[in-house]
Length: 153
Image (tube, rainbow, N blue to C red):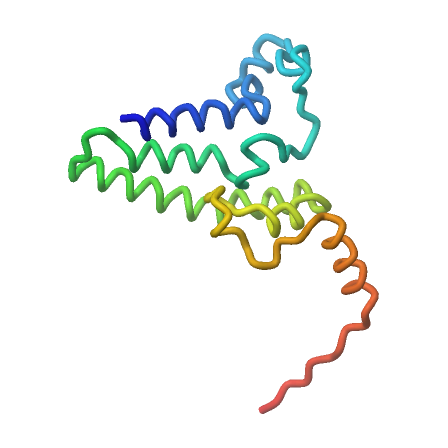
């Protein structure tokens, strides 16, 4: 039960890292930007709090709630596996490409330096670099001329 509760709290607080009230339609229905009044307004790309640990913290919270259920039955196991597979496919083929289109400047570096679901350091990609080093590497790669690849039969 404690792990299930942790998953619920993780998901709830992850929605607060972005605009919780806009996510659930409260901002649109009332016309009041509560997060901005508190000083946590969101304008565009967000990489604070949970989003600095993993790219999809709300989905990670769902994973925890699906797998750490207090009483696991075969029906719930089937439901959990089905939902997890659906989330993995939807994030990979629908959500990630949309983020790359919406934030072409920020998201590529963010996706290279922050793991998708697991905030534990051992699952971070090997080529994670500090932001300054990454910007220098990108400039060096852009300035080098591309070599043509010849097809060999």
